[in-house]
Image: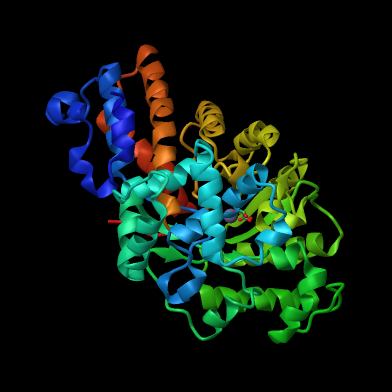
Length: 451
Ligand code: FIX
Ligand code: ZN
């Protein structure tokens, strides 16, 4: 038995059934605060810290209950996740054009049969669905789908959300809110109810990346801007941002950027970033989150699943952090080749906070590599992970995977430190895990620490 296997699969709220070793080794013997620990006691303390400290999920595409059906949940949404659709098209001869017109249930049935019956669900994304079913003690075999569908259909949204966040071991999530999204903005315009566990973010891709397609939507909301963002467009965009910040109370502003992103740049996006967004963030005391390295729609036939990755020139970040020392930048990069550079830049600029293993980086083998490198270069001054969940129950497996992957890496770091001559205490581990998965994010997002 690996303590880890049992540990990860145990629903967060049933913490009392943590590993047998924990049960058999009374806590006081393990490490009364300040007492030195053995290697296996270190591993156990790390596992207990990871399973007992609720995390803050700094980037998701989840929605608070008041946003109704914008919030995705349940087995059919889990199966039609764009990660699984991309994998489906690898296994199926079906042309995407014949797939999109199908109903949600028809798509889910097709994906279940192709990826979970005709093939073994060993990819990270397919394994995730199995882990979710298992967490609810639902069957996971070939014929599991009808019972799963019936189970999720029976759930009440608000109660289910509470239960899922608890099972995932997260106390709050950060949403992704687009002020120009025609389905979402009406919710805010009529005063969407705030929710203490769902924090808003002002997402600005349509402003900074595709202004030419969306400047009219800004005009439609009452701001005098033009296609070239000339004249008083910049001050109008500042007004737009200020109004939306009043409406949303965001914890940061955010934008995903292509691998070709450059800064400074005198294209419309570059000017709006420099003259409107960065100053607004500084004035409002908000961090700016930049997620760099996406190559949008390299295969548009796959829709959301059609995006890819490219290595970015991170001098853009160097210039931003150096030229705007009073701004804080929360940054995640999509390319594996950019991870090391990001760590180095974070050593140069304390207004730069690396966070998460974004999207194609969110695979255990790569998360391991990134986490080790960051611990070695940044200690605990980074945010290891975010879930990027698009469907509610995904937080269960994405955070279980993160706990499973990070536990041996953290334990190994402490073992090395103890071999080098420093006694590790239980409170050291509790403080560090709290910092990595809670207080770094809370501090940067001006969130009150949970009492
Ligand atoms: O830009 C983003 O926030 C990305 O995370 C998404 O666009 C992407 O589709 C995704 O779901 C990644 O996990
Ligand atoms: Zn995302």
